[in-house]
Image (tube, rainbow, N blue to C red; front, side, top):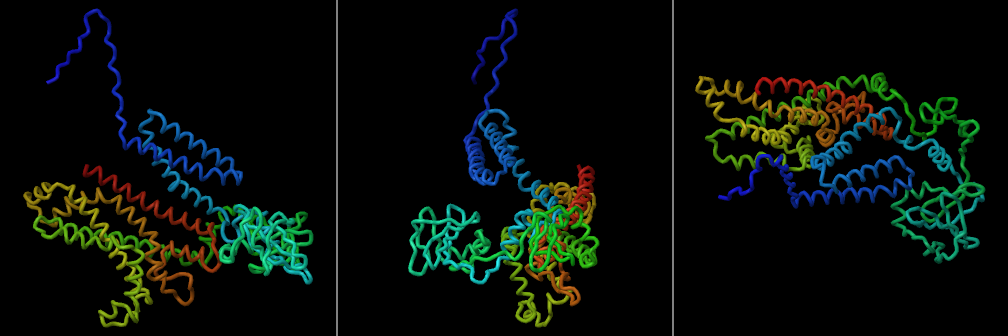
Length: 527
C-alpha cells in the first residue's frame, strides 16, 4: 500500500496552499469530435459565403460569420466543456425544428406559390419577355447555347453576314474569335463553354426564359438551334403602374399581387405579397373547403386513434406473450415479428395496394371473393387501417418489450401472493407502469399517424371519391386533402398550404399538450 509522506502543516506556519485543480483528461474521442465540428463549420462557411456575397445578403452573411466565429472560439478553448456538447444540438434544433416552423407560419400570411414566387420587378420582366412575338421581317439567327462561367448565354450567328454576337440578359455585343461550323452552329468561342445539344436540352427552361434586349425588341430562342427577334405584346408603364397591350390595360393590385383589368381578370404572372389572414379565412369560409373540413378532421382523428391504440394493443399483447417465463423460442418469434418494421414502408404500402386489387389481388383470390376493397368507403377505410396496423405494431412490440424488461417481476409476484388474478395484476400493476414509460411514445405516434401521408397516398390516394366532389376522398386525411387543394391542377399554393398546416399543427399540439398533462399526473401517482 502506498503511504502519504507529505509533511503536515506545522503550527503557526500559516494556511496551507490549496491543492491544484485536477486537469481534465482530454480523450481521443473528444479531440476527434472537436475537429469534426470545426471542419463542418468551416465547410458550411466556405459553401455559403460566396452565394450570400453574390446575392448581397449582408445580414445573413454577418449572422453566419458571427456563429462561425463563436463556434471556433468555443471549440478552440479548453473552457466551456458543457457548451461544447450543447451547441451542436441547439444548432440542429434551430435549423431543423424552429426555423421550419417559423418559416411555415410566416409563409401562411403570404400568397407565395406558382405565379407569386418573386418580387414585382421579376413579375414585370416575366410578363414582358413572355409576351414577345416575332414581327414580320424581323431578324432571325442561328442559335448556339453556351456558358460564361455559370451564366447561360446565346451565341447568335447572322446568316447573311456570318457575324457572331454574344447575347446576354444585358444586351447584344460583337464576339470575335468564334469558330463557326458549316451548319451555322458555333463550335468554339474564347472564354465560353459551348453546350452540346443534350446539355442544352437539359437546361430548356433557362433557354426559354432568356431574353436578349436590342434596340428594337427582344431576341428569344425558338427551339435550340434558332432565335428570332420580336417585340413584347405587353409593356409595363411606370406612370400608371400598369401593363398595357392590345388586349387592354391591367393595373397593379398590391393587395393581391396581380395586374388586374377592369373586368377583374388578372395576368397569370404575379408577385409575392403579404395577404394577412386571407389564407386562414379561405379555409373557414370557402364552402368547397370548409364544407368538408369537419368530416375529414373527424376521420383523421379516428384513423390516428385507432392506429395508435390498435398497434399498441397488438404489440403489447405479443410482447406480454413472449415475456412469459415459460415461453420458448422467443428469439425466433421476435425476429419474425419485427420483419414488417424492417421492410421499407413505401414498398410495403404498394404491395398491399396490389393485394387489395379487385381483379388480380391476392386477398380476393384467397377468399374466392370479388370485393372492391379500395372502391367502397367502408372497405377502403378498413383496408388502410389494417395496413397501418401491420406496419406499426412491430414498433410498439419493440418498445413494450423494452419497458417490460424494466418492470421488476417481484411486483407481479407480490400481487399474485396477495390474491390478485393475472388480469387484475396486469391492469393494476403492469399496465400503469407501462403507460408511464410509453405515453410519450404513444403521443408521438398519434402525431405521426395524424399526418401519415404515405399510408393514404400510396394505397388509396384518398379515394374513393364521390361523384359530386372529386376533390375530397373517403380516406383523405387533412394532410392529403391539403396536398390536393394546394398542389392540384391549380398549381402550387404554398401560402395556402402553410395556412392549413398551421391548423393541423394547432390541433396536434392541443391534443398532445392535454395528453402530456395527464401523463404528468400518472407519473406523480406511480412515482
